[in-house]
Length: 574
Image (cartoon, rainbow, N blue to C red; front, top):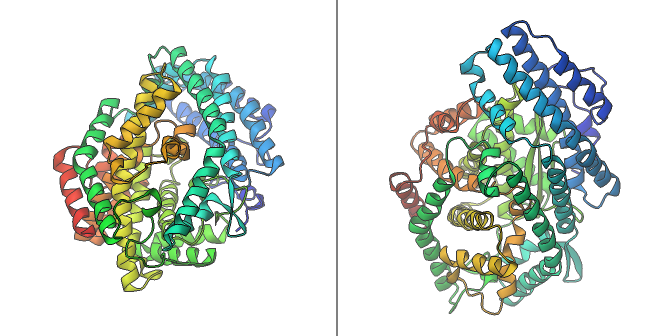
């Protein structure tokens, strides 16, 4: 559907407002500031009073966050709409910076009062741990720097959203061009690939400039907080209490040892099937046996209906939740000009309903994307009853278990879209994608670690390191000769590097968790789904390790965990 915004603004709060006024405009700074002052002036005489204060703050922050989310959704749904862009920019520039000092004051207020009036440690321990971390990292001088980074992120979105290609006499968005990479005609496929790459390269200088400025600002933010580098600062800011940068490097090593050989094996089989001397970049998406690309749907309504049936087969409650989203207009799935790239799920935190955004064009991968974002949406539904906003959001490493787990669970029911032969083909392609994402996460994460560990590097250093890291993880299995510039700037496609640095290892961690859920699913379907749902319902109220345990899976990068997972995947593919 085409989002107008009226459906997003019209939802009633999940729970009737008690602290806020019913008609308060939470885009108005004067109203927002009034509630900050009310919270700071509140008299606390008991632990019960303090707990109610926490609930009042949560109600207030959920409503403000929802206002911000709606502005972001509207902007990404149509980046070339000047009014939407201005509304979002105004909030980012004027409201969010003004909120940050008050958030620090609220945190200090809470930590001061809890010493006199302690609250239940079992219930609030995780919440207070995060607040203590945020207090340590707050620096008023960073507010303007963070605002500039946010605005640069919007600029990145706008540049990417405007990228189109004239192909076969028609203007296409870059996501729409992806379907031509599945063409069996190799010349046409190569032409499409080069058209996409050249279009991206036209803006490489702009994107480099944006990233260079972001990089400078982020390093300054870290220095202001007393850190040697932004990586170490960001791990603290992301509340990564359960693992360290060194653990990420163990992940990189495990992927190099166990997963890269499988990935190279996949590519070598593809090369043999296609009877090619070498694979070129435009040969990696097409069916290696020359079959036409899988076409699970031609209309968005068919995508929605089919996935609704899949979710219902995994679990009837999940099917009902997705139906609610469809009925309430909480889906914007089709690619179009002016739409931001990628896909995401965003929760409207006062309404406690999820919204899904993506760029579907009729490919098999679109089905997988909707299953993935559906997993995020079910996570939002599962923990929606918790009165504490912070506990309605799990650590991102587990949020991605919810989504990647649903990809694998839902993937067992793709007969909703395919014949038996097509179903098998889709599954194999997906397993190959699972191997690829494990490798790609290692590439992106390694690159980010190197960049921020070496803040004085030059553009040429960056170019060389990107190619070196790609080679470490098997890029030589594809022939990139004559395409140096195209390969050098592949990282420009990864919005996480621009917008949410160091938020990418989560996908690798979560994929390993999702694979464990899938193995449990094969042993006991109902029990695996039950554990999955129970873990989702915990939201952010437990540690990362406890959430993994609740889902009956392990947080582990050792041979003991990874080897059997890759053996199982290898059997599915070969």
